Length: 314
Image 1: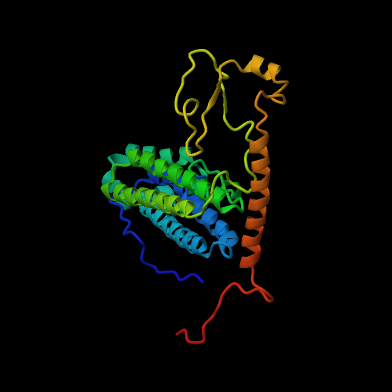
Image 2: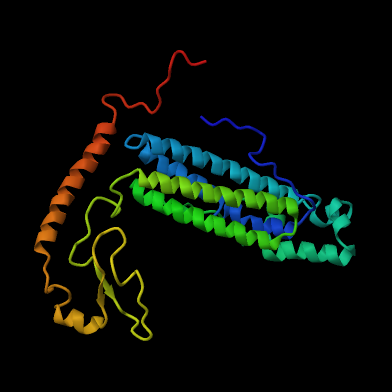
């Protein structure tokens, strides 16, 4: 049950109209890395987490709801940036506050042209109101959402989503000189960082969380690094020394083509890792049973009810 408070989470303000930047800001309203995409991603992920991970369900719903509030902040800012240019765009501009920040008719025409040429649908079809399209007029799409049904995978997707959104806000701040708008964007950017750390902490509470899913990696093919761009090859912690967190060393294949031929397409390796394969198969069985039982034991017996209501609630 959602309850809407008409006060914004952050007091968004705008010092002067800027329809061109309002159009750019649509990227965080209806764009691929925007607030609606984040809200819907965490909202849909929460359903699968409800029973096996009720604590993560609570977190995901809280953050999803906050993202909806950020969508409201972005929409409100876009609307304020269009002050005086909504409705009949040019006629309104003649007698509006926008003329106070422009130098004559030519400047007015230029700023209106900038908004129109960037995204004609924005001021014409929608009358200048925020719409679920990005800055190029492309409609919001559900394919932006990553919800895979495995919480460790979803949380890693969320880390990437928050990283991308943070970067978009960072870039957006370069395109406005309005101190109030920059303040709002800085708040929104900072909350992306906060959410990143929340998801990171949540992932750490799920153990084991690597590899994602249930099945283990085939130990015969885990350690090889294939040097597929041999000219000026570079060595680093991604192809030499110990693999992060696994206690195994990278196997650097300096010349992959003859290696693949000699091993009959990696089917006849010098070390067949029979013991490791057996251990992996046993772990696959164990993890499959545990994951299955985790889900089954969390499902309610008899009639399924999502909520528990208390008669003592006021």
